[in-house]
Image (cartoon, rainbow, N blue to C red; front, side, top):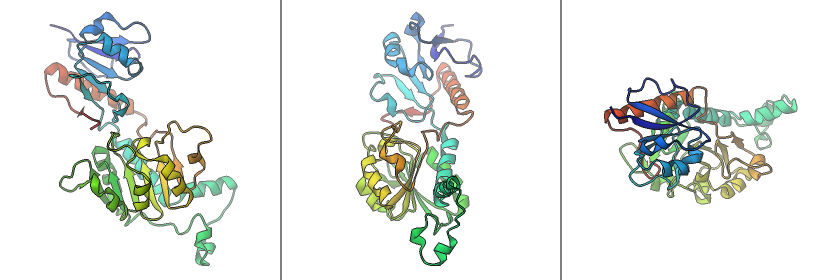
Length: 320
């Protein structure tokens, strides 16, 4: 029985991938020399030490057939995947945590939680009601506070995460419109995104990052959004043209909740930090307790498929 060699980080726990067929041999890679056995490896699990040593690994493992990530996004690999090597991501693993973050962000921004937290830190009990009733709502950061019920949400990139977002928003009485790379039944094409943005109260970006989607949310797109509408980005920072977003946040033209930024990480003193109407989290939407365990279990399933000669899932090409 010929061994099926899989490259994994040396930090990987023996049980993390689940029960593997007896012919599977895990070749562990740390900071030392790449083991000679890597030359016969068929799959590399890109987590731990492996991503930063990828070029070395590719040189030492000419017989690789599969690169398996534990992330949904694969844009960070760029053009480094050799011809003839299949790239698979961990799509599906991050659906629930990212969808929860998106819904949380929409609720928090709709109900003005960032403004309320600012008041709490100031020790100010200001319900804003007298200002609102007196007709001076423009002077209050709180009023009017809208309901989420009845809102129209546009999802750019309506894949598995988009479906998870829609399922969680539906009970709030929200209307969700999906945009996909290619038009299909029930989905709109990217060419319609600007027109649809003008009808939405919230625009959620969940697109994979490709040459076609980089900078898709630019000044023209932001100006097509409804005044005061909310932009939510849980995909990649480079989907949004930061220099176009900043003046529109400052003017109140739009509001935003960003889990990702361009540049990232956001450096000290960057103007985004002080923009009004903006919630920023440090690229943690998909990082919750247990996500890595689930991603590794999925990778174990892929190894079992490889050994059994079954088709792999989540095969990706050109970022999709």
